[in-house]
Length: 323
Image (cartoon, rainbow, N blue to C red; front, side, top):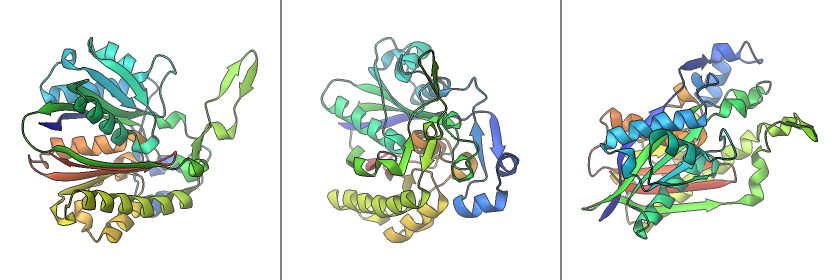
């Protein structure tokens, strides 16, 4: 028996903000952003397209791609750092929207590694016999977490959602191995302390309520940790890097991906990228890219993929799967 992805879906807001638009908000320009990040544009919520809205559309697309109905889901797991509400959870709101009446629902927060952690969690539930069919998604409305006066961070992030349906089926392949990790001692490298609070007893519009990042520290962490955990999973499974069709990495910065490819001694062509159009969508970036690969018919049964993410917490992980 194999626990495999049987369908994918994604949703991007209709509003597109290119680098020239950002130059009207902060002191920056298109060339400066592209040279440092590789990002040309990003999608931003219009206010209506919140985390639940986008996750719902991505979920419906994944179900359609999988050829199953929402009533077949045993579980829904949503990875997010930007839920619309604290209660109910995003997963419960998505359940109600799509009619997944049998599903147990919960959210998790592992920042940009969130989709991988959700994938591992789904796998564990299925392996234990506690679920058969699980919907997982990463969905983020980061535009409301960004300080739009901070040019070092506001240029990086975008909104979006990606989803996948996981099911146990006859045969080989599926999710083969996983490596994950966390280091809370470096938590201050990337933070979002909270949201602005206003009530009769307390009011806060602190700068630290928005995303704050030490970009150089994140860069050093990513280019050190991602190659290491990918090498761990290759060694763990006795797999050669040449056997991997694609390395599907968190889409944060083109320079990070280039350095990772170089340190792994793998051709950059094996590292698909879409960050030039979407920016960093945190937990949504890997499933959005995976959905693009799937819908562009670039994945065939038996292809081996490595998914790897890194983010706030700090958290990181890599998954080896056979499509």
